[in-house]
Amino acid sequence: MKQAAATDQLAFVFDAGAEPSAPGFTADACALPAPASEAPLHISAPRRTVTIFVRHPRARRYVVRVIDQHTVRVTLPRWGSTKEAAAFAERERRWIDKQLRRLQDEQARRLVHLAHPMLGPIASDGHRLSQGELIERAKSQLPPRVNDLARVHHLTVARVSIRNQRWRWGSCSRAGHICLNWRLVTMPDWVRDYVIIHELMHLKRMDHSKRFWKLVAHACPDYQRARGYLREHSAALAPGC
Picture 1 (cartoon, rainbow, N blue to C red):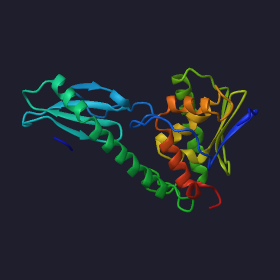
Picture 2: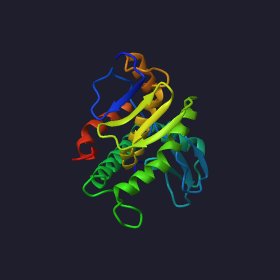
Picture 3: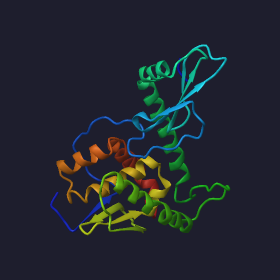
Picture 4: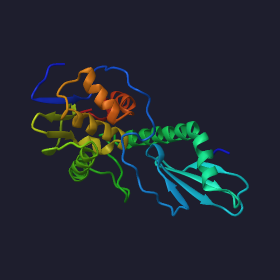
């Protein structure tokens, strides 16, 4: 709280090479905005987060709090105005972004621990999901997400397949067929979305040229951080480890 050459299909391997630098990222840059869970006085959605303004009769000053990865709450005193509260939140934007990144990093560390192939992620009822359950979850969750992001970027996907790929996170063919590794369902949303966007951008350029990486950076400003996550955790998430 704070007062290469073109091919018919391109694959995204677990440990891809370096690419040109890109602009800095904002929190949750790749993901679509999440709905707020609290009834707000007023809602705005800057930088892919939802800001909730709540008036409190005992508040003596404006207070900003990062609730979760998608929600920022600003408490207003009884005499305060939403306009002044929004200005206060904007002045604290650097601190807010820092807290959002910290929450994302904490979630990523938790998910890596839970997603270790020897243990498996934990379901809502407390049991550890089997590989078969994870694959079924991937088949139900990943294709709709591909289609959602394709619509955002005005692209058309012919087909989405979920596979048990050993050294690929995903691939894209010239015909618009995108294949994704089922293990993506165990990853943080912002990492999963980067892999999907990476493959979607191959519908525009079937290479890994500087122009391709500019497309990725524009669609997913957070991509360098996501690539770092994949490089760091590939060994833990790869099959057979």
